[in-house]
Length: 144
Image 1: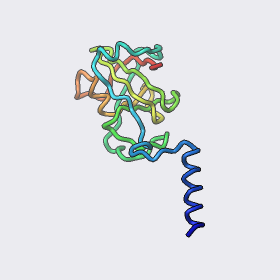
Image 2: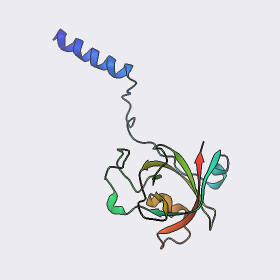
Image 3: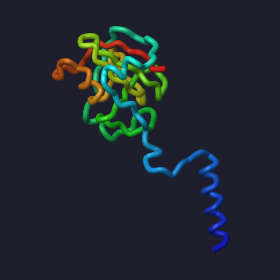
Image 4: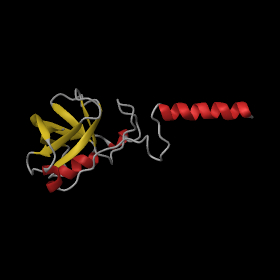
């Protein structure tokens, strides 16, 4: 019994020394949720791309793993980009109505020629003027 207690103590100490936490939800991905327009104005950004094409993910991809290893959820504020690092926060602004949303890059794509970024359906619908279309012209800014 004493040997089991010693092993358990060593394992727990190893987890703590490596920085693991045992709080609920500590391993879940964190996405920035978009707020109102006034809050977005206070964020420092660096221009990245202008007048590029954005589209959104299909619902059939829900529950699949992304290239970063996270489980895809169309109800979150995440996106796919070919070159930006995972975890990069990007402000996406619709050029038609100036609505913006902040998303976190967690996947690779889109792999259709002419498209720059794939947004989750939630992020796309929040900035879209015409909800019936699947594409937008947007400006991308890196959130610093």
